[in-house]
Length: 265
Image 1 (tube, rainbow, N blue to C red):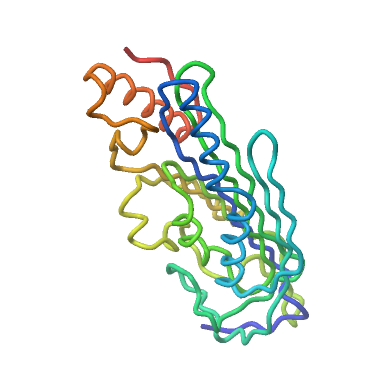
Image 2 (cartoon, rainbow, N blue to C red):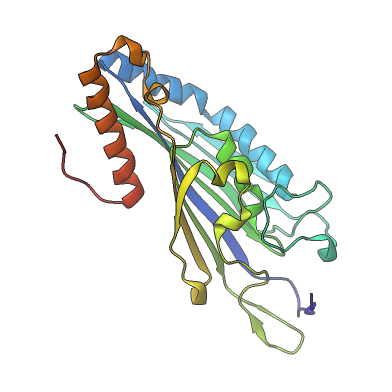
């Protein structure tokens, strides 16, 4: 690979942001409250801090500051400011392949951050509950935060995932020429492990000339048992199973396609 000598620091900003959705069906108001409480405990601020701290380790970042908060009645947020560790740029793998990075490979991350916000919510009548986690990893320097992608998806239960990756700004070489990206990328999918890509339907919407990449993911396999809270499929009648399956599938498709759909009998 031809190496370019820069004039000063690599000023490119690389941001990975995604929404992870977990969907559930609850039969009663009590079950709905219990599900929200379960999610709120499963993904409280302390647990989220552990996940983001490990993310920092994967991408080779020093933690400068942690701000975290559990909200009333539900939800949590964590923001971590991160800084660079020393790096030999020749060690950085810029190719499209799954992460995480080896521990010895670290990155310039000054003025960067990692944050997560959670949003447990429920349908007012239909029994559907949807948990959403918004995560953003934003770095400056020679590597992409995509290297932490597989770890983060594995850490949260995922039925639907929407991903956005963008490289912003420019950096100059010693001749004054501006460079708007410093690594090849065709698709976010190329940074995912086969264990993830085999499980999901995926579609890309990319704007290559703007260095904007978007991928949507929806689970291929549908197992009703996975979506029931405090219930088992064998405890339900056939008509109940069919009704719940329609509701859950409709919720998944609406989130995946980003629009409301008419009810189907």
